[in-house]
Length: 368
Image 1 (cartoon, rainbow, N blue to C red):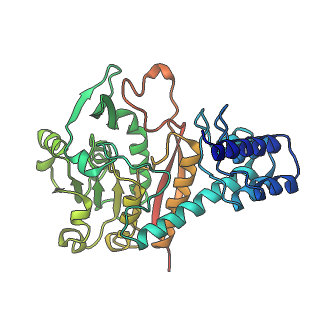
Image 2 (image 1 turned 120 degrees about the vertical axis):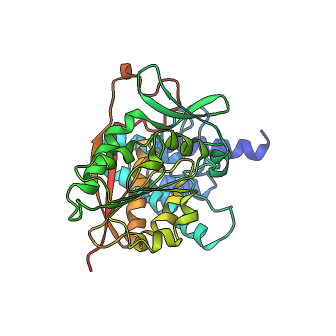
Image 3 (image 1 turned 180 degrees about the vertical axis):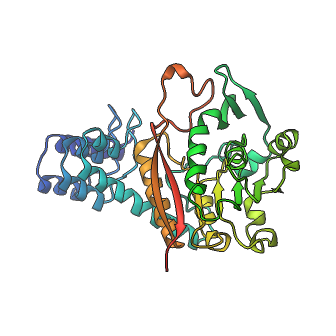
């Protein structure tokens, strides 16, 4: 460590200690003006000044640090953000302050990305991932395995760097069942639905659509992965009445005559793998052209950031804002997905949803 690094570390340590000691706002402001690095994370626990302010439960100090550019999504060695710390204290005021800072930051970065063709602008919640779990191209060239795990649940997995990662797993059935009921049960056209689903996976949501008291009159499924398409053929999906399978990515069809000349869909659902929030937001923008009318409904698998309650809350609220931008109002329902560890929900695969509550979105076009 050179002299400048040593000085920065000492100033950073002093700043965090001052915050934990509940020194005055003026003292903290002075330390910042003298060069204390607001981005610093201490060596002992990895906490930042914003973490320390959340521990001190000092709302005014949290506001000051955020206004000075504090890193709202920094994680300590236990993988906690300052928002997680506020949540652990049930401190709603500080939690919302940090959460709203995250939302503003993400919306700004999303706007910059939209206006630029450069790959340098990316949502900071998503680290760049070129493996099959984070790259659509790599995923479509990967091999998938359909099997039943040691706990008896159906799973579809891919192997990334020696670790099995679930593409879709049987525990999602409760989410998919509830989603289908909320999308379809009260629809005025329930006896003659036209449905579009993007991403087949294990076929859980599509089987629930087919099991409605009145199966869809038209059921479009967009799927790009060759192994998934083979799975669909083996199970007779290509021969099902009213089912039409479009082989490719949704980007290949979203402006095609097959969809735009269909007269619109009563229900649209999307659950893709290896696409980030940017891709989902781009799909949102096509919804006004794809939904049939004001009674039509839309949902998506709300799983982004779902291994951390703070990040999950931010993604949920950002998606609500972006859907509002394209003219959709969203209602949220909580689905209990908690489980006993003995149930072995994950088996030997990597977790992608570890929270006890799933926030289920159902969007409809706003009334004029």
